[in-house]
Image (cartoon, rainbow over all chains, first blue to last red; front, side):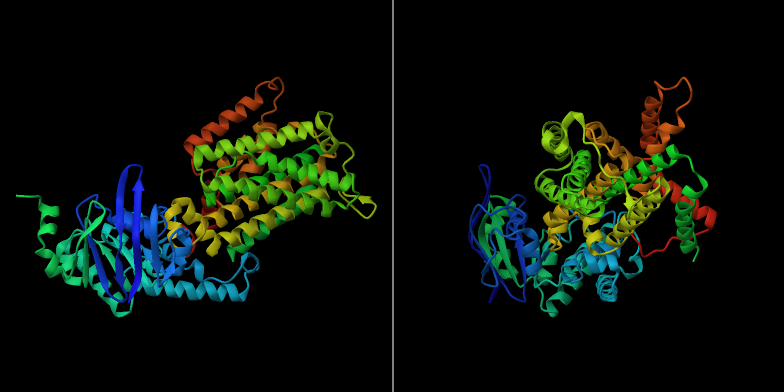
Length: 252
Length: 320
């Protein structure tokens, strides 16, 4: 069963077709990788599916529901969370508050209970703080919960972004180049994390350039070039695919 | 404990001021200062927390003032009802002004809000059957209890209580999921949306809240002054309100209070004999100096000062 599939999804920016007639299925409970040379449309794929960029034509189905054209926040609340290629944290909030922002959809208290500071709201706040701390523990940030994320090491900032995405309790998680610019030790942490998430039943779509990473975790790989799928299969299969080699290395 | 003591001290100061100071002009001025503090508090919420700019707050100030004046004078409603209607109409206008903010940011948004302020100002001048136009709106009832008119000192207590209430509401909202979402939106729209939060709804709420406080301020002013003319509702006043919020500290809970009171009283301190032509210029200069050398505003500086004096500790669970 595919948790998400696109049907002839096309996205063009003026004359540039970034995603051309993409029909991709992401199998539920698995780790799928999306690879391809720079500018092949990987990030655009994530941005169109999550609603950041409006779709030009085609459809996107999440659990068989048409989600094309919905607002970003609606799609996020349905259970699709993401991280960004260039890390986007809330620099004016503390580490734990960054995670708590993504817990907002779970709060039931309205503005009046907030102003009156009702016991119900206090309980809700305490429960969600506990939940956020749990997630920080999962990514190894619990001792930095009340620090500012601004000065933190790159790898930790990436982990915080993942914790924030997980706070939405997503069924599908998009990770846009989580290992970019990381040392080997740092991305080992993220690799282990992705495998833990898979055991918890979260489907992951990974956009990545680090081949060792993909080889180690991906169950299925799509290769994009010029906005189209040129190959798909297990990593061992696409590794030897002549079209893929041509796209990455050029022709002899 | 010390914090509670400090808050009790502040409330005591509000209670004692009119008892110790019987000068009518001083009291009138302090009432104006509290009105400005209420309005600037709304701007701190809108700009400092939610990250939206409004250079048209005088528009809401006018809507609150003329609505309350109209409903009390022409339709004979009691003052509190007039004020509530003024707030309600102002909030509705705030909801409408939030719509351009869905697409526009910073510079472009500020242009739209300036235009809004101008439109309201033109309506004030030209809608003579309701506003009295350039001739003014006369005979607005002053605050009273039964048949007894309240004194400026008693009005000061009411305004003080309303200001404390406004700041308290803002404090509670800031330290909730709504406040966090607004601060997040201030940092990054797209990331906030990706956290399942509708930034449109947040913007509607933020503009509505700030407009509500401006409407309240306007209505309070109408019944304090007893007479309305178009002058206090110009673009100059809108930018003055923004200056109050900035000088007080856009990111600080007390920013509106410090800036609103400070910038209302500052020109009065500079009214030396023979200086009448220059005191407004000096005020502007001081504002510029504060913005350049204390970009966070006076609020955080005063807070640190109080912390040193009372040896208060900063709790680590609050927003940085």
